[in-house]
Length: 431
Image (cartoon, rainbow, N blue to C red; front, side):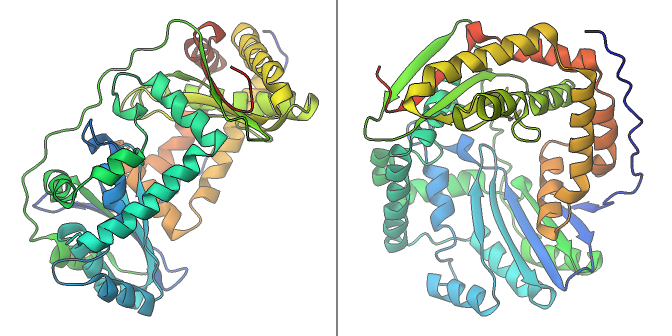
């Protein structure tokens, strides 16, 4: 497509986070960044043992472990832990992704050492008491029932099962099923912990009002004596992309809204085309009110309550998913419009203006995404996990700026094709 558009140069900043990285003798990685904006420290502990570590027959085991791991240790009861955290105004957040279980909190700088000691005890020596397991099972089962009654969750989880079939870990439900959760035993949780929790799998990100020497000394005291063998690598199997279009309806006739999940498998995070795919998807379904999808389907046609696309490259080939919430009467028209927008993007490509605006948006969002200590700690963990380098925040603008229009258009052709889309509709829609 010819155009007279000439984007002005993007000004890049040469300054960066400049964090410090130290690897302990036992394999623990420490990432540190001192800031003095507030007298607090963000702690982000990432253990490489996400839902991919679930036994094939027991999906959701890692999720349940994350819910109970802080409910007592060999030397502390659940009440002791709760009282210690509450007394310091600290709230723990536990998350489980496909590859990582994270423990995150923010504490006053003066409380950093005792809080890190407590978190270390939780990760290294959880007691997993049976009464606490029973309580957490009840909470997880309630969450699963809520998911089963939610068309958006049903559509998304079913889509992942179809994009990643035959037991692929990316296709498993992170929380598992009610039957599996009810059947998981304390011994299974302890076995998962013993097999996957090891110093070689832990990275500790500390960002805040603490000097690196003190941070390192504290981490050495808490984790330096931990010894466990290096676990076997968890390598997801290859992903076979769909070769034809498929569609599945999950009838939920008691609902008022239908949710659409429409997707493809794409590339791995370490693929050099990652930044072209990222920019292409931003134009397609992320930028402003939802990119081209939002402008067409939501704003101009008024058919969707929401519509957007997400791109999640990972260790294995990640998904690119379009999600939309619509009235039942608009399902077919919305799906047809998604098809049309894909064909238009693949045939005509992005415009130079769209690519430039997306570059500016993504590059401009980097400083805003690193405004808090917790956000910086999360960024450092992601860069560590994918081996992006300590200067990734400095390199990122250049990596995005280097993407050409041909690169982004090639990404669209590689990723998108209505004839091989996998489509799931959940809600009050006839099968």
